[in-house]
Image (cartoon, rainbow, N blue to C red; front, side, top):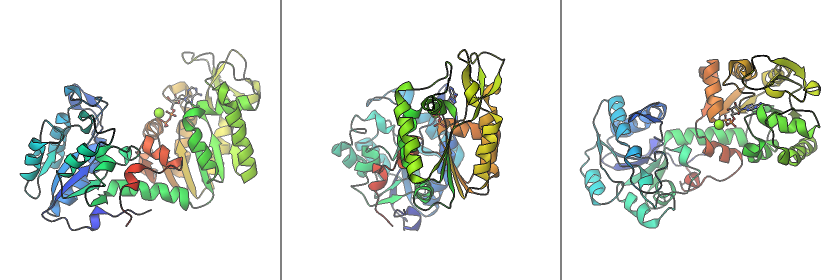
Length: 392
Ligand code: ADP
Ligand code: MG
């Protein structure tokens, strides 16, 4: 899927209103992690070099539709200014006369960051008045915030309907990669799904089952699959009310000829605090133990599938990788994905942390940064922020 792109549009002398995802963590009033800001620099710098003035809009945290100094974008403006090596103008409002004057006063090559869009009650309800007021801040609109594309908000959808609108390069890259994964994957297509709960990922599991050649399960969600296979899982994290969903996945996989694998051996302990761990077959988990990681046979079997894949998608850790005693499965899978001869995509907050912990981030083809937006895309849902942009 290709959207009309800002990189191929003449912008000289125009004011570009750019929706970015600067929803970054703050600590003591400063930006604690500027990854998202740095990721957007090429978009901003390209517009500035090509003679546009840039008005930036982002949400930050959840300020509940009214101004809250704790969620002001001021620290972001400071950090962005350092990164750009140029001053970044700010206004204490999102829209209105003061914002319009500041936007109108920009010369080509200058940047304004308006206040947190969620200071306005009309943002999340996609209020037409707010969308109209935002549209008065630019001559054209660029959406480069894939992470916000699953929400029909005034700053993602309403404004896109009121100005000539374009996809930014970051958003386009996410859409191109995820649509390649879903519509045109190199086969075999192997997906690895883990994480805490089946219920979080049922939509993705369902949709992926219609696309992949093999689905490998791990983490807490695999425990529910083991329950469905009537194994003892002790006091492991699991969702007994999802056992029927797990059985349905098994049936659908069989109908479609998808290889569906659950762990065959696991790492167990009495509790997360316990340092005494055991590696046992899934048939031999005792009632006083819990499953906290996948075992070596499972790792070997999963990596065998990963090594013969043409496309690999991974979301969700294989165990409680935050603790050294239970990190092995997740780190081993991370290394196998990195070593694979396939087009590799990893998505999800904790999965990215695992990729970092394994030190293999550079060897993954695409890191999906969209969080909830990526998952909704992989569930086969239409993302309103993307639907609102014209096709190329
Ligand atoms: P992501 O953020 O990558 O989508 P999730 O949020 O779904 O991943 O799941 C990550 C969490 O799942 C981690 O905090 C991890 O500790 C937990 N987890 C994985 N395996 C288990 C397990 N066997 N028991 C309990 N928690 C688990
Ligand atoms: Mg998570």
